[in-house]
Structures are given as structure tokens and as C-alpha cells.
Amino acid sequence: MRREMKGEYRDRASLPLPSRPRESPAGSRRAGSDIRSSVRNFIRKRLSESPSASVMEAVMDDKSEEVLKDFHIPDYILVPGSKVETTSHIPSCPVIAFINSKSGGQLGGQLLITYRSLLNKNQVFDLGENAPDKVLHQLYATLEVLNCKGDILAGEVQKKLRIIVAGGDGTASWLLGVISDLKLQKPPPVATVPLGTGNNLPFSFGWGKKNPGIDRQSVLLFLNQVKTAKEMKMDSWHIIMRMRTPKEGACDPIAPLELPHSLHPFHRVLNTDKLNVEGCHTFRGGFWNYFGMGMDAQVSYAFHSERKLHPEKFKNQLVNQSTYLKLGCTQGWFCPSLCHPSSRNMAQLTKVKIMRKNGQWEDLNVPRSIRSIVCLNLPSFSGGLNPWGNPNPRKSAYRDLTPPYVDDGLLEIVGFRNAWHGLVLLSSKGHGTRLAQTNRVRFEFHKGAADHTFMRMDGEPWKQPLPVDDDTVVVEISPSSQVMMLATPLCQSKSIHDPSSPRIYQDNDDDSSQEECEEDSEERRKFGAADTFKIPDGIEISHLS
Image (cartoon, rainbow, N blue to C red; front, side, top):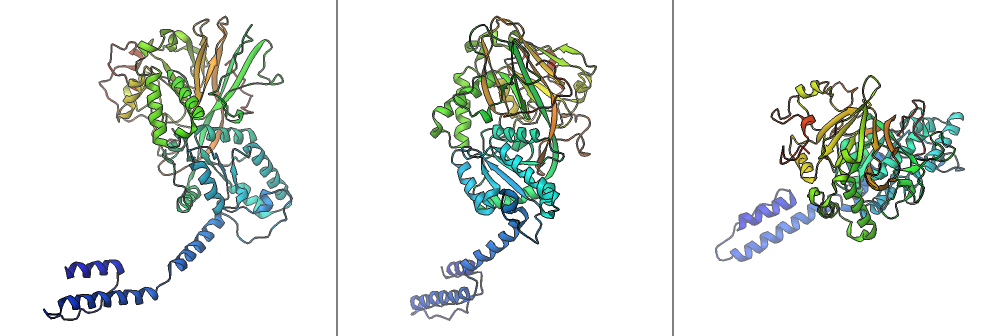
């Protein structure tokens, strides 16, 4: 008993104990009390000689303040009309943070408070109150003026600036679109904080897919990761849809309830836009992660609608994901043959064309069982799953496939039959039905096949009405510019310019699997492998919201 007590005090104080007095059998109880009293007094004395907790906290705060100087931007750069400040410290990693306070349940708002407590409050913007295009336009205009005046700090900030965006994939895409529109000679690289449900963009570049910590220490750790992250280019894609002006009714995209226009993935071009054609409705947008169409987008639309109606039920990432799964069941994604009209199968809804290397359009053979098509730019879909997988070398050579890179100007087109099909992605060798790789893809909708379909870009779904009397409804995807991302050592994406990236596929696919191009019926396998008019080359993507 005494040994256990002695060990307990030694562990607690991590200090040498005073010598234990000898005790007689008659006075053992009193001796034990004297030992305990002696140990307590000894510990109190030694602890009184050590720095207090408040002193240690002050020391840590001083160290944090030193670290935070590397991220600090002074007010005279951020606030027009402020008095120019003189400083001897040049920040090595100046940052601007954009936070969607409505993302992640309550996390977005709490994260906003933490960032503002660590950085200059004028460096941190709530996307619900500040439009990022206005913020960045003003910032770069100020930097240009100060540069012309020979301000050394302004020049360093412009050269080293890094952007942090906290929110879901839709929020990150919105900001990437704004940066693309600036058409800067050296656009700032972007780090993404995962505050959404899927978080495919953050996961692809090593920032994780779980919602982050919101305390001071977690944010400091993230800032240091931003400081050491490497830059990586990523392709962006332009999408355009054109149809004749309907005789009656509207064909504008229908968002899930009230989605802010700034986050709307698709919008109609102005009459003065070069893409506008008289007698037609033309819509345009852009994406960085994926574009999807079919049942998968339908389930996502139902999820977003439910979240808009009952936001109080969607404050936990795990709850959000389980709700998404339940909606997949109610929408018939698990049993489409019973609940889903056969006319909604992709092959019966639209003809798909891809552009080959010789510049010629070619019809893509889409199996009749495919109910969802996804055009992938990144190796992450539905919360970190990789629908493309790793084809074996023989199939790759036969079908002219290359390893997927995020900066090679190619999209990977994948098909899904149902939710069971998608569950195969959870296995190490799981993958979707690989349809093609291409730099341009066109969907030509069959006249009268359906009065609407569901589409989704970078996590933002919408319901797209289709005129039943029009045989010229076309959606076309083409390459746009590139944006710069920040990647951690856990990055899942590969760059074609990275020497460590494979130039040929590794033989880690299942040789016994059937050729993807022959998958044309559900009877062949119980579970399959799992998820526009031509733009002139001179036109750049712009006015993304």
C-alpha cells in the first residue's frame, strides 16, 4: 500500500521524494500520516519555485505572437485610406482568410472568431458579409498603388500571399472562380479548410476530409501547414449549356430552395456576352472537382433541399452523411429498377460525345444500365472515394488511358449503375465503370426523353428543366485555365510535372475483372465496379459565381 502511495506521489510531482522515516509497528498509522504530510509539504515547496501556470501561458503567448508575425498583413494594405506604417518585419507567409460562417453547422462561426483573435481582423472575412471578388479586387488595387510608390512590404505581400478558404466544396469553388476571374500574372495559391460534408477538394490536396478543430492551437497548426505547403497547379473546366428559347415555361436551373446567387453553379449569360445566341438560352459555369448528372445528383439535390428546410438537423458531419445515405434509399438509388424510370438512364436520356486526340468528335458507348455519369478532375468523389481507381497496364494500353493527373488537361469519365455499384469504391480495388479520358465532352439530349434532369458541380446540385419540343439541348465541357493550390505531404492528387508521379499504371488492378467497355447489363455482374457548343479557344472562363 505504501509503495503504491509512494509511486503515486513520485509520478505526480516527477521530483525526488524525501527519505522515508522508519516506523514502529505500534505507530504505523501515525507514521503513514507523517509521510503523507511530509510529501505534500515537499511538493508544495518545489512547485512554488517553478513558474506558475499563468507565467507559462504568457510565455506561450509570446511565442505565438512571434509565429503569427509571419502571417500578419498591416492595416494600411488592407484598409484603403489608412496611414502607412513602417515595419522591420517582412512576413514570410502573409494570408487572407475567407470563412463561410454557415458551413459545418456552428463550426464556421466559431472558426471565424478564432482566426480573428489570431490574425489582424481585417485579414479574415465572413463570406456571408463580404463578397470575395470585391475584397480581392480592392486588395490587389491597393498593392499595385503601393508597389508603384516603392513600398517594399507591399511587394513582398503580393509575391508571397496565400489564400485560406474555409467551407464546403461549393464555397472553395466559388473562391477559385473569383481568383480565375482576376487573371493575375501570379495568382495566389489556395489552401482549403474542410467544413462541408464531402470535402473532396481539401482531401485531394492533403487537408483532410473531417471538420477541423476550432481552438487556437488547431488553427496555429493549420497556419504552419499553410506556410510549409507546396504549390500545385490544377486544371479548371468551362461548362456551357444552350437550348432554344422555350415557347412556354422557363428553363432556368432550379436550385434547392434559396441558394445564394454567388454560390450558384450555373447562370444565364448576359445579352452582351460573346456566347449569347439570339433565340437561345445560354448558361455557363465552371468546375474544378467534378461535374455529375443523373441519379447521384438527384440524391444530392434532395439532401440540400432537406438541409435548407431543417438546418438545425444538419450540424454534425456524421449526421449529414447518414442522412445522405437515407435519402439515397428513399430516392430509389439502391433499387432504381423499381423506382427509377428507364427513360432516365443516361443512354436513353442523352447521347455522349468525346473529342479524340485528332480533334474529331466521337460517340461514346454508354452501357444501358448506367444511371449516373461523373466527369472527374480530381481523385476524390463523395467524401474521398476514387471512382477511377487504378486500371492494369494491359487495359490502359488497349484503351489509350493514362494515369489521372490534376494538371494534364484531361477529364476521367465514370459511370454508375446504382448505389450498390458505388459501394464497391470502399474496397481497395473498387472503381466505377471507366468510360473514357478526354479534354472535351458533349451531352446531346434526346428530344422529349424527359422534362428535366439533375446536375451537380463541385458539391452544388440543381434541377435542370428540359424543353420537351427541343432537339438541340447541348451541354459541353472544355478546358479553361489553371489555378494554383496548396498541397500537404498527404496530398492524394498527382501532377504531371512531379518526377515522383507515375508515367504508366502500376499493375494493381484485378486482372480477373471484365473489360469495362463490355459492361452492358446488370446480369453480367451482381455488383459492378463502383460513382455546349464548342468554345472558341480564345475565350477564357469569366464571371463565375
